[in-house]
Length: 235
Image 1: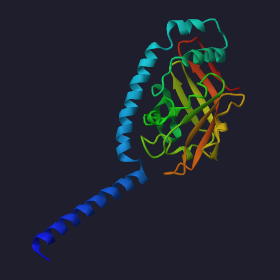
Image 2: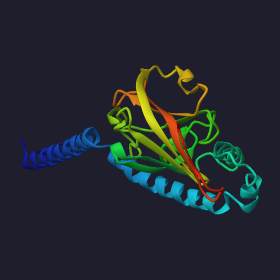
Image 3: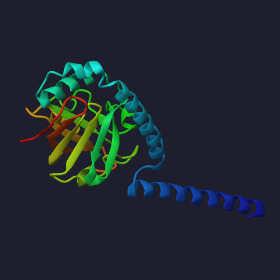
Image 4: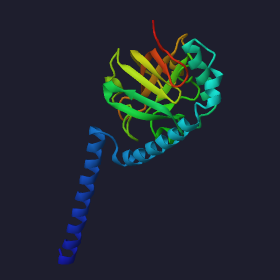
């Protein structure tokens, strides 16, 4: 074998080994945490969601929104009226509030929509479901391995854990009541059930979209901002 050929094969071999190490490192990071490149992109998009939420909070609730509920003494009904007015303010892909789950260390902006682009920004609100305060089912979906993987640890949420949704018009706390593994076409899990519940969903198992892991939680406390005194708690 000639020297030039041997040198060329050596360079090729080194390049292939280097590429293999990079691929293995990427796989290792994905398995241990989340996909690195999409995480960077997701961080940028989550920042945009935070910016859009800040703009929404500047205009809602307005003085007119607060005036519309000023005469209502029942805190639940005040919350429902504000949520109804809020539903006309949201835009697909924009931030609408924050979700906090202390049990898994989650604190992130929720965006409106579960389309591909929206879920790259953070957890997404199912547009066909209610908003906090409307007394029906609220659905939120999130990735487990890509784009910040907000729901990676969804299986580690315990029954009895608190899930808090902080909206521009109030804070809504939910207590986890159970888990269920369902097929992707079982959309009935976000049907209304006669009381306000929160349903969190994510793909299952990890690195697969074969099924969905669903967490169910029931409304336990309401605290409204600038909408009159009082805190409602589940009796």
